[in-house]
Structures are given as structure tokens and as C-alpha cells.
Amino acid sequence: MADGGTGLSENWATLWEAFADAQPDQVAVVVGEQSVTWAALDEGAARLAGALGARGVGVGTRIAQLMFNCPEYLESAYAAFKLRATPVNVNYRYKAPEIAYICDNAGAEVLVFHGSLGDRVAEAVASMPTVRILLQVDDGAPLISGAEWYHEVVASAAPAARIERSGEDTLMLYTGGTTGNPKGVVWRHVDLFGALAFTAYMSAGIEVPTTVEDVGRIAAELQAGGRSPIMLCAPPLMHGTALFLAIGAFVMGGSVVLLGGRSFDADELWDLVQRHHVTQISLVGDAFARPLNDALAVAEEGGVIHDLTSVTRIVSTGATLSVDQKRAFQQRLPNAVILDMIGASEGGPYAMSMTMPGQAPPETAVFTAPPNVVTIDPLSGKVLPRGSVEPGMLAASGPMPTGYWNDPAKTANTFRTVDGVRYTVPGDFATIAEDGTVNLLGRGSVCINSGGEKIYPEEVEVAARKHPNVIDANAVGVPHERFGETVVLVCSVSAPTTAEEIIATVKQSIADYKAPRRVVFVDEVYRAPNGKADYRWAKEQALS
Image 1 (cartoon, helix red, strand yellow):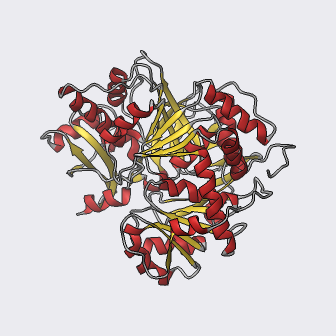
Image 2: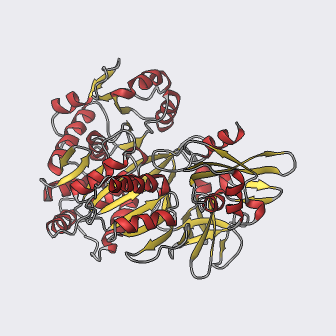
Image 3: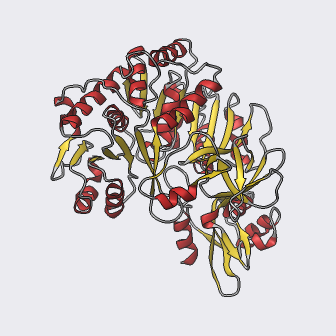
């Protein structure tokens, strides 16, 4: 073991090895119909690490992962950790130029990909000169030129020996954001331990372990005592959220359940919840909550009632969860605490809203800021006092990434030191009242400037979703001859609705000048697979 049993290594390969040693027969991950034990996960990762190590992969080598949910995704991330290499996520929706951009920007030397994405990889190869190893996961597509079969490489390799590792090793999480090219967020293992493991231990009232053996022992004891979470993550692995949630669940002796389909299927999710007695569901706002509640309603109409009593927590992060959807969950999952959080790939959470079983949920987008969260004046760069009516940028101290890969300018803009405290400042604007209540305004990069007045999309969208027929909405600014920009709402509805009706609903909640001048109706508001808004798409719809 990395530290010989004398201390705590905050390296995730070493910690995952401790889980495998302490509970080899415990299920680590479920993907659809497939279940993988810790022993099998460790064995496969060790063999892949052995194969890649023989091919020159080592400390700091970037290993890109272009896959749908599958056991090989976690296995290859684990293998990267074992080698002290850096896994890099690649969005499976990306086309060849975007895949090439990520791999070239990261300097990836290895690309692990699903065969059905092989045509894109083959097209991208010429534009990503650092990639020298292609491992194709078999999903029925033919092997592309220059690639090796993943399963054959793993099967033929000897397991890599366990080595000394460091908490300074890294994971790279590419985030698309709302503007510009994706950015690689660099997390050290030690910071992920502070953000995920430390929080998990403290929340459970467990003293943070001091040795690697203690990490494994505590996980096994929690599992044996029935105190471990069974975590179902609705977003796919490739967005990073699921991997982070897995890390948090594993330290508590838990298992992670993932959808096996290649598009979100609410019925599959509820079947997995019932079959595996899932205790926690993680999703991203109404983009997931609405189809989940609709699926349960349809099932009930057909006389099918799911047993969902195992669910004790629903966590939404990345997009607001409306009060209507919270109420719908409460009707069907009476034992669940509903936790609505605002977070980012760069850190957080920045604001939270907790609804206990039987408690009336607060209005949509009503949050409370934790003590480590402040707002920063965008002009002076100083921390604003709580109670200030001036909008500021939400900022959180605590464990956070080292910055963006090879981008010192963006790193300096997002990771700021104020009065000796380092904050992560992803660009969300808000005000924080004296009692900690957060009024979330939206991302500054998509702030709309109309006649000199700043209008934040989030507040327009929240107001629009109060109309009973509005399913989803994005607010964007489009050029206007007089005002510079004017607000356009791109939305989907469940029944025939006029633009005037929606605009009137918005004006009931916020100032008239913030209300949309125009409404564009679409069949479905496009969101990324993790549920986050795509304002570039929305703006294209508004301009068209």
C-alpha cells in the first residue's frame, strides 16, 4: 500500500484499493443490468494499468474518456489513478472537431472510446497529434484503424503492482460553460478528499480517519451496519458529477447506480431505484425532475405503484428545482429530504435549500448561503457585506481546483484571493441578505444589458416557470436598436399558451423591464445531458 499503513494517503487509487481490500464482494457500481464488485473493479483497473504502464503511461499522462455510461468508464478512471495519470472527460455528444479540441488542449496520449463513436474518433485523429493509444470499448461497432480492443488489452495484461502515490495527482474535468471553448478544471486528489470525503465523514458524525486501513475499515463497517448510501446519479458519468458522487458514496461504503441507456429514461431510473433499494437520487433541476414525476403519474394511472420507500434524499445541483416538482416528489417519496444546491465544476456549493419530509417547500430558487460563501463586487474585487443590495459574484472558499489547464488568465479570473482568502468565483451573480438568504440572478457571462439595466436570465426563467403550462425556459438577450439588447424567452409548454399570458406571469414576480419582449416556443428546451442550460442554443433559437 502507498503509505505502508502508517498514515492517510489522499490519493484516490490508494483509497479505492482500501475499499477493494476491505469489502471485495460488495457491489461498487451498477450500470443498467451490469453489477461490478470491488474485487472485479480493482482487478480490471489493475490489468488496464499494467497494459498502459507497459506502453509508457505514467505520472501526469492524460487519459481521455469518450464513453457512455459503462463499467469501463470507472475502470479506466481507476486505472489512471493507479498509474498517477490524469483522467479527462470528453462529452459523447461532441463531434470530431470538438473531440479533437479537448484531446489536443489536454495533451491527451490515450483515448478510451465506445465503438459507436469510432467514426468521429477516426475523423479527429489527424487533429490530435498527442494521442498515441486508442482503446475501443466493444459495443458492436467494427474496430477502427489504429485502435486496440479494450477488452483484449485488459485480458492479456498482468495486473500493475501497487505503488507509492501522491495527493498531488490530478483529475481533469472539462466544463462547457455558457460561452467560449470548454475549459479543463484541474482538481488535485487531496482537494477532492477535502471537498467530498471530509464532507461525507463530517455529515455522518464520523471522525476523519488517519490511515488508509481505517478508510477501508470504516467503509466496510458502515456497509455491514446498513448505514451506507446507495446512490443513483441521473446525469451521465462523462459530466463528472457522477464520478464525484461515486467518490463521496464509496468512502461511506456505498454503491453507485447509473442508468444503462444512452439517453435519459425516467422509467429505467425508477426501476433501478426499486430493484436496488436506492437511498439517494442525484439529478439536475426540473430537466430531470419533471419527466421523473410525469413517469410516476403515468404509471399510477396504469395501476403501477413503485415501492420508493428506500429513498431518503433527493439532491439537485446545477439548476434550480421548482416548488411544483418538489411537491410532486413529496407526494410519492414521503421519506425523502429534498436538497436543492447551486454548484459548479469549479467548486461549491454556493447556496442550498433543504426541505424536510412533511415540510412545505420554499418558493422556487429560494436558497441559503453556507458560511464560507460570500459575494464579491465585480468592480472593486472586495467582499460585499451580507445585506448589501448590490449584486455580486457568488464566491466560495474551501477545497477547490488549482485552476484551469494551461489558462492562467481564466484561472486568475475565477480563482481569486481576497484579503488572504482564496475563493472560486464561477460567475454567478446574486445578493445575500443578512440572514443568509440568496437571491440568485444568473451567470454574469449571459447577463442581458437592456438600456443600461442588467437583467439576469435566472430570475426571468424562474418567473416564467410559475406559469402552469411552462415546462422549461431559457432567457437570452438579442440585439435591439434602441436598448442594445432586449429579453427573449425560449420556452416549451404543456398546453396551448400565448406569449402575452407568459409575459403577464413574469411581470407578476419581477420588474416590467426585465420581462421578455418576445417569446419563442419550441418543442423542447435543449439542455446538456447533465441538465444545464445551453444559452448558445437558446440564443440561436431566439435569433432565428
